[in-house]
Image (spheres, rainbow, N blue to C red):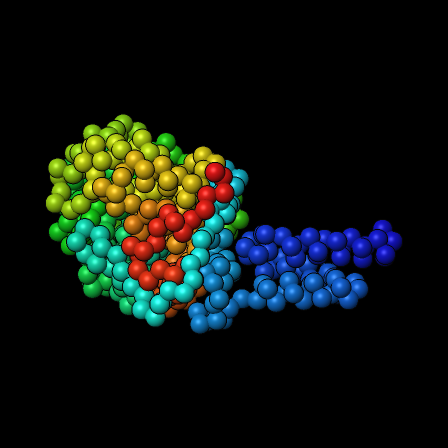
Length: 428
Ligand SMILES: Cc1cc2nc3c(=O)[nH]c(=O)nc-3n(C[C@H](O)[C@H](O)[C@H](O)COP(=O)(O)O)c2cc1C
């Protein structure tokens, strides 16, 4: 191709890249951006300028204090984690489009800001089952935190303690629940993946209860399995010997005192996962409720009908979630599922929502639509992978600050002042 054509093509490509949401969202690896910018050294000044902007926008933060938003931690996590572990963190289902679906859902709702309110005092606290938390931002359960940092769930628990957050602990955590509660310096909520047999499930619930967990959250959105292609690709790209760490004979801490066959965990490492009892029905919620003194929440609810069934079968609360775009390619963001759930529940049960929350505005929108609290998954894991406990704390702090800023901009000084009057639904 003649040099002029090459230059023009590169310029066009860079202009396209500069305006690309993929760049803004940090979806392009820094290595790729660096290669692209290097390839443009010989092109004209406009293209060079664009190249420099790209290079700058992709610069990795060197410490948690440099982060401007939670995405800054994602770039570091991608660099520091082995390919298979990053892919486990990042993966959605099918072509990963659901990740964008969750984010795009927020665009449907606009904010109605109010002026001239005395906003000097701000109270972000929220009450859940009699306990008051400093913030409505909840640390959602994520499995295998040891894949992201050696301090794993302990680092998350310490950050939760320092920043005053509710933490949910996964059934498939890398760290025993007793140790996590000690590091948290108070109760955590136990997320339950039901085992194939009831006795094994009961034993896990009993252990969580004895350890001091103050609620149990039954996850129900993986019963039909999920097609996670990105994690499979990441495993293929990773040339380390996974069996050095993933010992199929070493069960997860929550499973250690139980017969491993109860869980029917199959497959060669590291492709093991929680059991997915196909026969579970709504009666299971009542059964669980009768088996514990802890409040029972159901996680993975995305319709008004199922929200009503949660209530009918005795659940004390629910989590609107599509497992962070990891459950199925429904094409629906959780923020768009929220209104029908809120309507069905009618304020009788607390509603926690997660999946795709990355900004204070996202959190504010959910609270305005009727959520009681908002959960995050990947953002704190990006922080954990990047800088351990300090990274998790920084992520929590950023989100808290962003939420507080939106609250001030909207003239709301406590959560109960945030209402549907602060929202415009563009689809109506
Ligand atoms: C790496 C990873 C592991 C997860 N493990 C669990 C789990 O063990 N149990 C569970 O109920 N949800 C699990 N989730 C889903 C989260 O609890 C939460 O619903 C989701 O991450 C929220 O979406 P977000 O990552 O977009 O913030 C996991 C999510 C990720 C990213």
